[in-house]
Image (cartoon, rainbow, N blue to C red; front, side):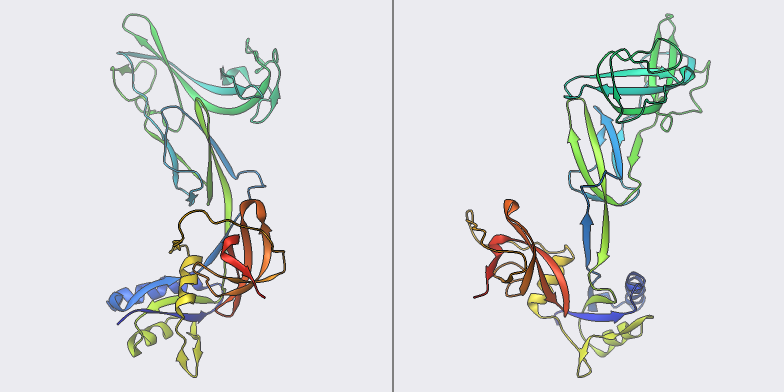
Length: 355
């Protein structure tokens, strides 16, 4: 027997905990074969007009773990910096705290990097985004002078590790504090050629958001814009199951479940077009167009107009245009799905006027 979709009314705000409790019950009773997916449709909002919640700068050799426009969760790895290995045999001569300052010209065609010891004490205006002119000092002490007009696009802390070779020459490594193997790098410690001085460093996001990548010649800028998720149907979850006394009773007996949305005491099964809409809203189904070749679009609609959706998973739904973007051939239409008003994003070619 084929699984069917049903709407379950719950106490608002407890949808996720109810979903988890239901999944535990299904597994404990070994009824996975009678149940399918459990969905809580959400609307994702992204505000690119606001500054990014996070910004990271990575350089050549760093491996990106994300793609442009990818959604990430808090703690996801955005990129990994490779470990640093010793070039030659030697002994650790010196370890000092440093600051790195990257400056670029306004046209972004030229960049210059400065490494300044913490003991020199940076000028108070040295921060990301600050404009700077040639000849301006970077620190209170020492001869650290900016040599170009431009903008500071990165500043960060580093450990400057100097290793003296057996020949008396010196190798210098600039290592991020989080990645440095501190138990190995102590003054006077012997270091062998090829020995790791730092661990692979993972750059993780601290927020839930969407990734934007800006790739340049020697570096990549990773921006994470915060996204918010709002439940489209507060107080409801959608359950796929094979209807029987056993499955319906299991759902009804789950704590904080009110009941199935019913007519005459019988749970209401979603219609095929509602099921397609549900899966589309949940991001679990991409509707594939059957047309071949480009579609010519003529924009002859206006905000507030009632239209009919003529193709896609929302085919035959009627709704009102709330937003119109002719330059992108996009439109947002408010339709009634499961008795609730829901915004859906469409291509203009997917709607038609109601005559």
